[in-house]
Image 1: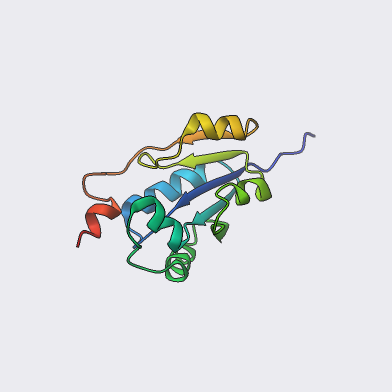
Image 2: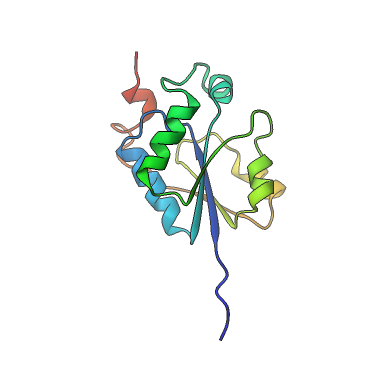
Amino acid sequence: MKEHKIIKVMGFGTFDGIHPGHLFFLRQLKQLGDELFVVVARDRNVKKIKGKKPVSDEKKRFADLEKTRIADRVLIGHPTDFYHLINKFQPDMIGLGYDQKADTDELQKKFPNTKIVRLRPFEPEKYKSSIINKD
């Protein structure tokens, strides 16, 4: 009997106030494999990428994500090396949100043995953190 290889999936995000769009994203990720690792962005990196600090700090966002019980492991991103956790856990697949700025071609070149998948949005005109968290 052939042994089943565990398929590891990794996703990334800020997860600043978990909303139905996040849950849809997480459930899509979960369906891609057997073991789901979700990385919560560091506060400093959110500020660098989005130009403003998140509403909730990384510890709260981490705890909120854990409470969903969707991911097998919730991780906090590395402070400076965006690829650190990909290198450490060697996922078979990386799922990107429809609106994430990551360059799929660059990621694919850097991790040729990892499948990069762009996921579908869930009512993006309604469930997008930048809309929900408007000042």
